[in-house]
Image (cartoon, rainbow, N blue to C red; front, top):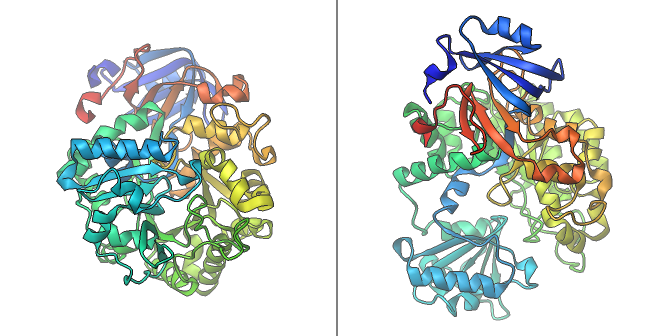
Length: 550
């Protein structure tokens, strides 16, 4: 198809559909689009008149349309590059992981390293060590990152390449796990992983950009039209996005957050939160206050169950956190902070409160806490009071529920508390944390509404009192995410003047049992008034730029 298929006016009218707008009217029968923007939503007659002479009529055959879905927290370069590395997410046992590593080592890998991600030791009951890897891969370095990205497992050659020995001190905010003799076991936690990352071969910009473009289709296929990128080294990914946009190959709307190693460049370039446009904008600075549940490094107010000496790991001192938030606010940059444990969440709220009090300009920034996996109930109301976004990933709850029960015990009753936070007035934004969990927002909707895994376990939902309504969950993936990124005037709902970003589903999510939400299928995805993806069984006329982006 070519743009001419939309008619000489470049306008079209979608009709014959149930259009869920997230606005007013909440449901419409038609929508008119011209030049990539919505010009009318309502009745067929109203939209036909608004579209003007020569507009193409597109009959959706009774299907349902939603606003384009937005993932408020993922790691796109990591997701894209994982296609070229050893994926271990499907493994269920240590022997499975080792067999995959042995196969990768036999086939060879980039510059001699075996690089992988996705193992989960909680599935087999113990932490692995370097000897496990050495048994199947002793002749080349191997580094495998845990599924949450907060622990790495190295073999002997990789430890040697990184110069990690019994004499290597733990870096601030990280830990080198050691055996009874003080020797490194091969497990690096949190910021200790950087000791190994610095010696791992990196792809070239051309390789990285090719991987990024190849992954666009993965997002379109699940209905994503926008994402919030939560940190890659320096400003490399942002510069990738600029280069791809100039080449006409930017396939998603992106709100970009930079890590601390990007901060000086951000200041030098004069970036502020909200700078950019509807396609690419600056979100702010990304910080880390603790680790994760699975790695038992989430910073907790009380010890982990059965581990009286372990309260997790603070990856940044509180005063340092406040200093970063203040410096960012002084430059007009919001902060998104990773905080999973209840102690880390309290520190994040305390820090935002301090900076807000001392620097009034910070009050207008969209400050965010990423994950909020367990928050002490006394802190729920502080999110709304301080205007802090609760950026959460529903699929984490259903993926981690058994681990949460095991490690947090009775306190897991306060974990993934979407309903309580919303009831306390918190602004929720939903995402996936891909590649840690599935990219699919449909899976996220199912998890948010049912608190069940894809197989429907457990019956009735895990701690189901924290489930949210479908309307609230959809808002988390649309207007909630748009607001968190400062883009609510451009995307997040289907309203006149906004970008024509939408998703066509095979069924109405509001008309199926909650248990079936995960089986909904995306049939087509539109961004900026152009169909970027269609399933095989549907053929919608209109502008289509797939050849340019593929």
